[in-house]
Length: 186
Image (cartoon, rainbow, N blue to C red):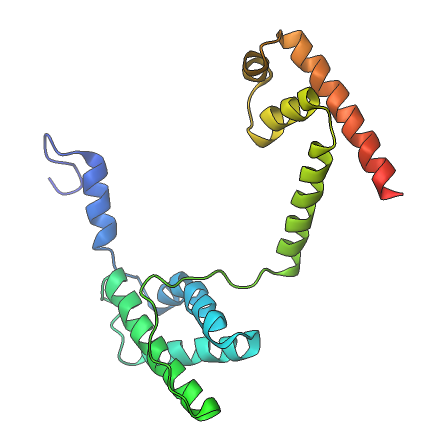
């Protein structure tokens, strides 16, 4: 019966086969699924956002007419990659008199971080610096509880202390971290 795995068939294997042969519903889903990596590719190749945005739009505009929505996901991505190569070649030819037509098959850089992402990176660095300034036991209980997401019981086992002692360590560590943070913010 379609939809149910045959006897003895591993359901995970069946699921992987379904994903591999999957197709897009419409042009909008093609765009939503692929715009980020095409944009990241363009930023990596041209080095600036305005040109990368224009080139990304150009890739999708060029692909709109000949691309079949019924094509499989890998076929759509291969076609978009080939279209991106052509668009980049034209970009470099007109701007620099130089044609660049190679795109690494595994190239998928992240776009430059947005201001909110940069703030997140700075916050993580401040948190790491704050933790590094704490005594070892305090630092360790906070890492176990909040960075690794362990329960108080699991954290206590990891540290070799009682649950009550772990709670006290956590409380004192948070107090010390708050004092350090307030002292550094002045």
